[in-house]
Image 1 (cartoon, rainbow over the protein chains, first blue to last red):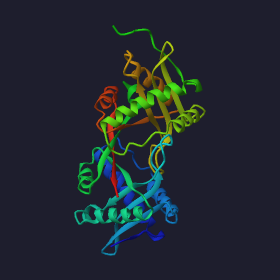
Image 2 (image 1 turned 90 degrees about the vertical axis):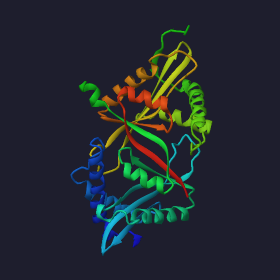
Image 3 (image 1 turned 180 degrees about the horizontal axis):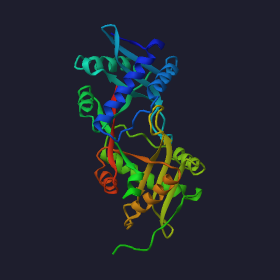
Length: 161
Length: 159
């Protein structure tokens, strides 16, 4: 069952976010790590967004527990030197490993897309770690197109060499 | 024979906005030919105002390479932040690096990057992000040659 998140879900969503960050870390150690209190900070962020008209959080509930979530926001994605157009940004999505391959992720995305549509948006964006092949395959299967690449450069590596 | 008159690097001023806009728009035309995806439309006067704002904003650095009176390239950097909860809070962002492809400017891109890296280093920035349009093989090769690595794909979907 997909439903809108409530304040009671915030702590669990924070824990899911931590799993998401750790999942990325396992793929690429250079991706950002969670700080020691990252999960609780994220839960606070979730709470702050529950009543934000520009944000929407959906959770997937299975067997009486929250097993996944998606967080989307309405933003002006393009830099402000361009003509502005409100668009959607899918900030985070995660489904517990043992609940994957059950179309839960797709259902979460569908719920968010319906909300984006209700906000009058034409498109939305999201970021996928280059190392995350499974996620890229998932997004291609949903019709996503990769438009940009973000590269990173660590300055301290230069000073060490 | 290429004109090897030396290139001088300096911080951009408000008097450079017209030349910055010219190089910016030339690059946008190249980008548009590479991809038909959702490249945002540029409003020249808005961009001009924005560059003027950036020149007055301490979180931005704009440096230009000048061959005599002609602008050969520029770099724009910005100090931003990651979302709450991650260990890296502040990051450097390469907003744009553009080199005029019509004149000889060997090594200018690297020279402008060195200036920006030094500025980031002064601000205790450890990680720099460089967004590129997909299919920009030459740009990717340039950044990889400097030691940059792939981080994320930016996806989009019409709804």
